[in-house]
Length: 193
Image (cartoon, rainbow, N blue to C red):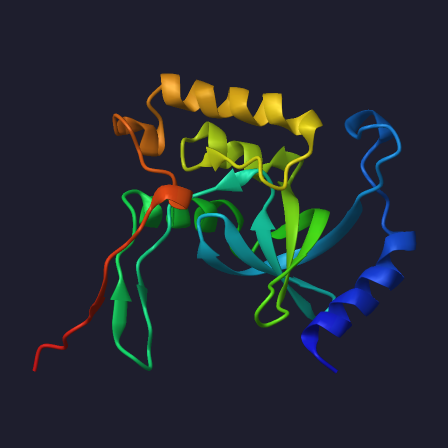
């Protein structure tokens, strides 16, 4: 069985036994799946891997998009440049959650068209702290409204505006380029030898 099937089976068993957030925290009629797990990896400033009862779940932070880090394709040697502050955002998320037991409030499951990989779009809580909003407040990303509920738009954008006015993180730049506008140059990485 593929990992995605395990995730669906895990979610179907856990949904009835995991208690959702109090009703006052949710829009009327909305039910969210909340899992607990250990953060075993961070791959970007807005992406991490959580191990919940032996199943690894790929998670993208709900409502947050951070600068892209540089990439090197191991097979072709092609190098894709990263954005300013990408490493800082990656480090900030790692310091906050890596090797920590967190609650994952899944808002939506995303499936990649080309390879059917699944990713949970989720809010991460650590000791009652909303890590997604902390990343925005610390200035490590933009409020991402593409998959966000309308009810959250105003709050996430207010947190982003506050970080920008305080010149936190990437907002030290006059006009930082969001990832959806970033077009990196591809080049072959040359080894010194």
